[in-house]
Image 1 (cartoon, rainbow, N blue to C red):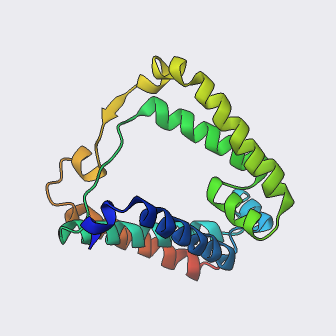
Image 2 (image 1 turned 90 degrees about the horizontal axis):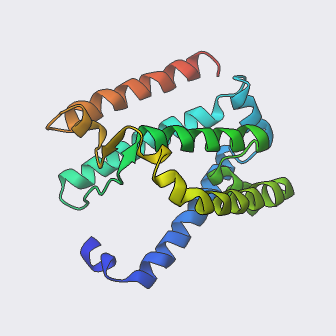
Length: 186
C-alpha cells in the first residue's frame, strides 16, 4: 500500500493537505493555538503545550518504530550539526518568544481567524525564510558545519542496535512525566 502511495505525488499532496487540516483542528481543540495558553507555557504556568507535545512525541516515536519494524516505513534522517541545531533553536525561540506562536500553532491560529498570527506569524515566517535563504550560502560554509554529525538517529548515535531498547524506556519516561504533570495540577 505505501509503495503504491509513494509513486502517486498528487495523492500524497491531497493526503498531506487533509492530514494538515486534521493536525490544525486537533491543535485548536487541544487549546495550543490560543495565545494565552502558549504564553502560559512560556511563563511555566500552563503546561498544555508540553502535555500535547509529549503525547505527540510518544505516539510518533512508537508509531514510526512500529512501522519500521513491520517493514512498512524507512527512516531517512537529514544530516545535522550542532551549529544548525543551535542556530535553528535560536531563530525558533526568538520567534516563539516575540510572537507567542510556533510555526504549527501559527497555522492553527490563522485557521481559527487570529489576525496576529496571520500578520505577525505568517508574514514573519515569510520574511525570516527569505532572510535565511539569502544568508544560507554563507551560513552553509561556516555556522552550519560546526559539529557535523551526519544522518544519525538517536539510537545510532548511542550505538544501540535494536532501537526498541531505547524507544520503550524513553516512551515510558515521557509517559511518567505526563502522569506527574497531570497529578501535580499542571
